[in-house]
Image (cartoon, rainbow, N blue to C red; front, side, top):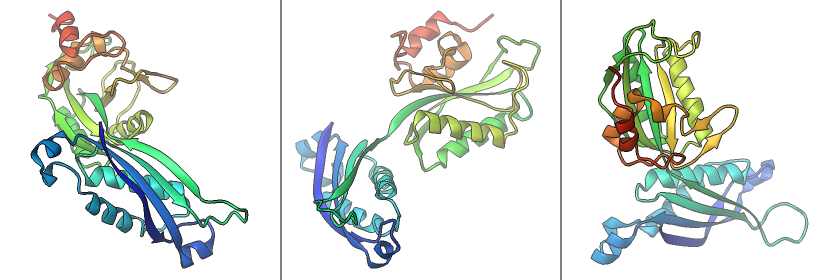
Length: 272
């Protein structure tokens, strides 16, 4: 993507582990690379189609007035703030330098460099206990109101027959596509918190549940560890996952099978 670069913006702030740093304050140098598409702004010579770097500089100065012990925390706060405040920015590379770092040795500066960005995730939702629509609606509201998520798009709900353990009620299923600042494991933790808020119990494998939230895709990442597998290992074979997701992202490519959601759905029609 294109970049807008801010180099060594000088800010006086009160970050530091030592108490006197937080009382007296010191100088910080902030450099930021904002990744966005500037073509429309360049073609039309229109400031509203890009990011006003003067406003970004003012925003950085304002955000730096909150006090942190660690420059790592200040950098994290600042990067997330920029991504939330400026919707055109997809990624920010940030360096926060501390020229007066109390190391008691000759040093030009100490700095932290981080890169943060919005990621696109696809979720599958299901419920077949209690008021299933209320459970799914509550999950949608929780994600829509989360400051770490944006651009939440929800499919229509779909009634499907249970798979695996069939001696249970039909399911109400749906899918959501969203942008998130969470890492995959942070997003998983948040989905499980939402499930617990609806009293989810894991008693029978593939059994009935008040709310089931699964992470299907996360960008084009492939993840396999003790806690998380992405893409979801069963997604490519499940009509109740593919049908709702095809409403939102029919051309999302499965990063392992190299087939789109629409193609996978054609291979897995509704069970009869």
